[in-house]
Length: 152
Ligand code: ATP
Ligand code: MG
Image (tube, rainbow, N blue to C red; front, side, top):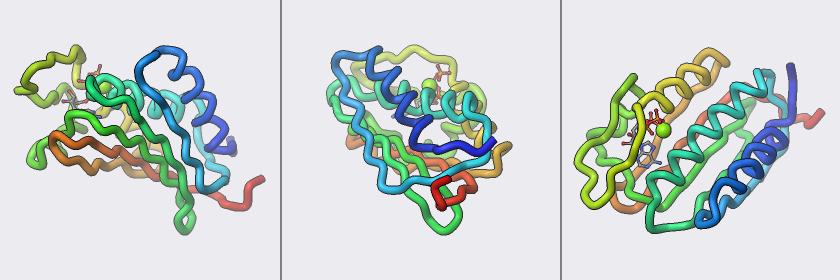
């Protein structure tokens, strides 16, 4: 079905904000539009990205969730200012069971499945997922989906 992507993102962000006192989830929606997709699956993807942003930012609180429209695509990004990912590992994080090892002071629980599942969902819905990151500075995970910018 067609739905307003900002609305499903806002609902998901509001739910997740209740799970953390420490982190501030900041929504920055610079466009509205409709995507044709499965609401629950898109909500699951955003949940995976935000829970990662929380988990891998033990010392910073700001997480920015942004949306924009480019041509006929909605682009959704989740930015954190946490531990980041070394450049040579950035492609691997989307593989099944892959986890970056060697994080100094902190150990982070997980299976290495969240990003694999998320990227598979986005592919199936006709989009793409990618990451920009600087080790020690933070990460921005984004996905695109075909969209209609007319609003309704
Ligand atoms: P889970 O299956 O519970 O999601 P996970 O978080 O380890 O476990 P993924 O979400 O697939 O698995 O992420 C894979 C790996 O990518 C993580 O183990 C971590 O090393 C790295 N990673 C993912 N998101 C971030 C992030 N926002 N900042 C830094 N590293 C990240
Ligand atoms: Mg994860």
